Every structure is written in C-alpha cells, then in structure tokens.
Length: 146
Image 1 (cartoon, rainbow, N blue to C red):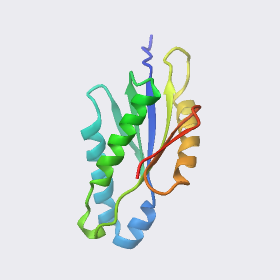
Image 2: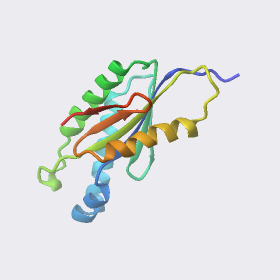
Image 3: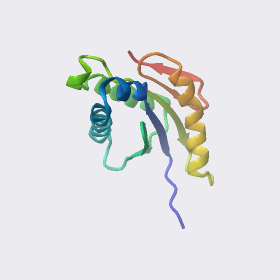
Image 4: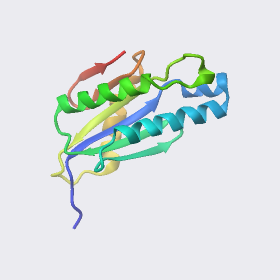
C-alpha cells in the first residue's frame, strides 16, 4: 500500500529563459539553471522533494505544508533568494520566476498528473505578471513579491 502524504506541490518556471539564452548564450543559461537549482536545494527541508522537470521548469513537493500562510512564507523566502542570484555575465539583470501551486490533501486517490494540471493552470496566470509571482490553485489569491 502506498503511503499518501498531504502537502504542497509547487511548479516553478524561470521567466524569459529563452531570452536569457538568446541574449547571453547557453553557457549563461546553464548558470541560471544551476543557480536556481542550488537555491531550491538550500531552501528545501530534508523531507521536501525538489526536481527539474526539464528546460526551465522545476517542481517541489513539500509534505505537511497545508496552509496558505505557510505556502506564502515559502514563496517570499524563495523570491528573496532568487533575487539575490547574481550571474556576472547578465550585468545586474535579475532572474524572475513564476509559480503555480496546489495543495494535496493526501486522502483521495489523486494522480500526479492531476496535481500538475492544477498547479500548471495557475502558473500560467502567474506568468502574466511582471516580477516574481505565485498563485495557489483554488484559493484565487496572488502573491507577488517584487
């Protein structure tokens, strides 16, 4: 029997990544991906699962995070740390991310694909804003931090 854990699924997208690659080259794009990865690793707890989905997309599952306030606190910490990334070749241009998130109750049989779809739907709304932004599926709230 699989053990289901309630928590928060976050999808993270590096905004304007194609533009970074086109402007500064793929080596700088690689530095951006590595810097985002290191930031996620630094902020994750031992029980969190963070992974790169591919390209400029990442995901984190944070067991036990089931309240909007706790999620928004994490978003703010992440945005603050992302803004501190300094890639020399980008000459002061900051990295921005968009996030979509959804809570998983852990009680129903819900597939990763369903959770992904929910988080992805609000991530696209988040992308429409300038600067680091996050939205939580089903709460119709926006957390913009820049």
